[in-house]
Image (cartoon, rainbow, N blue to C red):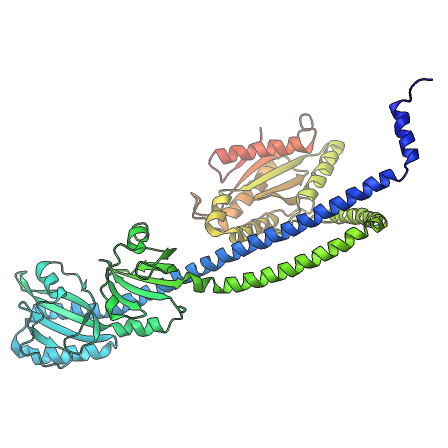
Length: 525
């Protein structure tokens, strides 16, 4: 007798140990269940970590936007406050240069300054100094005999600079009242252009601090009003020692302002080393910068609480899944029947989904027929055209520069644009047998049974002109409005044997329309 074959050996082994395949299968099932449980737990951990990171970035971005908006608001407030004072100075300088500073006019000038000061609550005072720095007049009724301000920075600036524009000097303590003030000044000239003195408006720093202190900036937030020379005009929280401190070596002047006159960032403070989420903006028309910042730790405090809560929930969920997985693994042998039932249910669900898919023939965004219905319809119409020897035409419509439209106006506006265009297409197709459909993205199709290429071209032009006349704004388009390009193709029974042939011909015509400058209809060759 010969030796048993390999086939015989295997069969004999199976007969000798009929339980072996079941044992191997059971072990594989347990191993696969363990791997699946580990994969699920790792996936949940990865997803939770990713969501926590995204949440952190959202918190930071949200506060950057808030700081940008706050900086813009405070810059507008600073500009308005200074502009009011500067307008008074401009009028005052014009009056003084025309009428002169005759001593006989001083009492009337005093009354005028006092009246003007009372109109603006932020004003500490209005002052006039002659070319030697002597006090000529002031709005506060202060005794000015013998007083001289020629040592002040603003006086030296105007004496040495012929510039007639406003000058904002460093914050100082008033000699008349001892209060911290900001100075806004203009030069006064003699008729021959020589220096004749200075007109000065002083603004309470408390005018800015009262507003800044009313804003919730957290426990360690700051608001700065900074001069162009990098010196601090006023800072919240207010410290006298920090007034006039130079920030020239700080990140605002070394990194941020050289790139843009406004913006946001996360940087470390030059003064106290605290990392903050900041917003900054130059004050329009004046050499000032508004700088607002929230402590990054305060910004992320809420995020840390949310993350800790999410981590706790995730841990409990992982523990629950671990316990459940352990129990499931113990009862793996009982799962065969359940799996069989689930497979049957799955097959039935797939069949139901297929039936539902056949019913879902409408595009959710535009309300037009979707690609599925278009494919079914054009196939049926081509068959009808061959049988009855009748005409059939197809339009391929594409929105010009639609990606640029989405980039500029956003996807919500892009969706609204597509809905508007679909409505225009529907309004310009009157026959019940015609089918408008959304082909995909910004492409639409119109199937025109019983229509030759001439009739189809007229419909295409009608739609194109209607879209243009809708005047949907599109600043990224050379036309300044949304336009469409149309490819027109009539069904040729001799050369076009499938829907793809007809669609391809219309698509080539559309390509020619695009390449020829867009906003036109082109008939396929």
